Image (cartoon, rainbow, N blue to C red; front, side, top):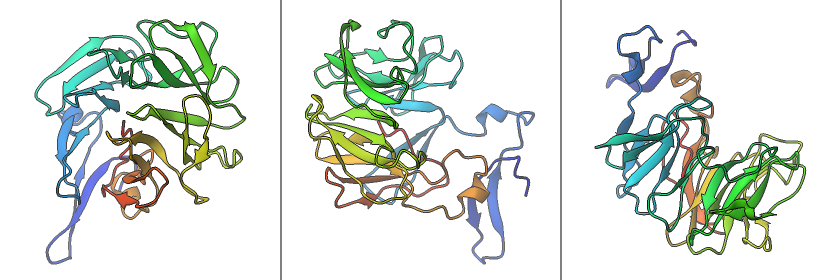
Length: 286
């Protein structure tokens, strides 16, 4: 099997004698850009859970869950696109380089990105993963302005000119913050418990005023990213490596994180449940 070529969705015949799979033959294949579907339904082990797959980067649901904003070309001038949650319509908001996107919690149709109206000052570095407060007045985001990847909160309309403060500080990586719908907590991923093991991340919670910082998950060799809250602020959802690897390296040999299955738990990490099981990374839950 050629490891230079993608192989998707392996399946075994009824007599267990043959292995089938979907194969992507490369950029020169006819209709190569349609081989990986832009939007498709994905089966879930939870009967009441409906999943949609978007073959792009950092999708984010609008507050009413009817629209999804996303980055179509990571690291390029792809701008921000929007698609209806049922896949019935798609359009472009603007061009230009962007990274993660986020919706304002109160102002209808307001999307935050890495460009367009610049809220951070020149000379600061790597200001990404914005998330609006529920009242739409502030934005939490990750920045490397202190030479470390920590979290900051600034005014949602005036940016740094309207006020900014450090939420976390230290020689480690704090990233992918998410504000709880009730406004009480900010969840994020961090390797702060052992910065020397940079690839291992846990979930942390902190109040917006910086108090109450604590680690939610507690094992030593975990990698948990893309944490977000349930609408009632009582549960957390995140992508993590507790599902193992299984056949993923064979079916998706070039996948960045083929172990990223979606789990949910209570705010204290208890009552953990697995929601997905497939051969791709199920990340960017927000």
